[in-house]
Amino acid sequence: MSPNGSSRFPRMIRGSVVVQRRRCGTRTCRCADGQDLHEATVLTYSVGGRNKTVMLAPEEVERVRAAVARYRAAQSKLEEQGSAGLAELLARRAAARRAR
Image (cartoon, rainbow, N blue to C red; front, side, top):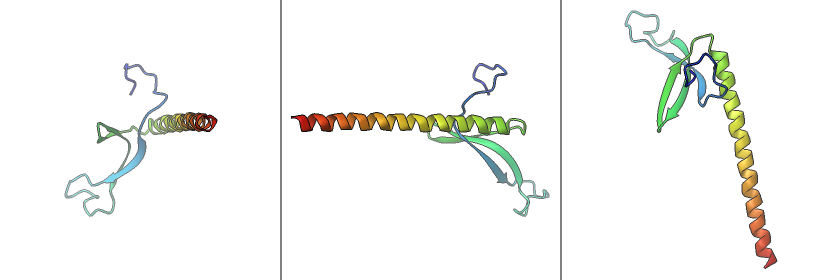
């Protein structure tokens, strides 16, 4: 999953880890009646407005979930910093208008 092909696992991953339930399409399979569906844990993400999925191996699931959580925490922190910067700019402008 690392862009340079090394064995190091990514620290942050953008996307969502979900359990996908679906039919396989084989008429004689246990899932054909729509009740006992196949489950797979996948990473979903979007690129260029299109949704993509990557099936995860069982040993990857927890590491990917942790990387997604780290990404979301960093994104939240960045949003907070951006909002604080905007509030500061607006306060300065308001103060400058009052000073005139």
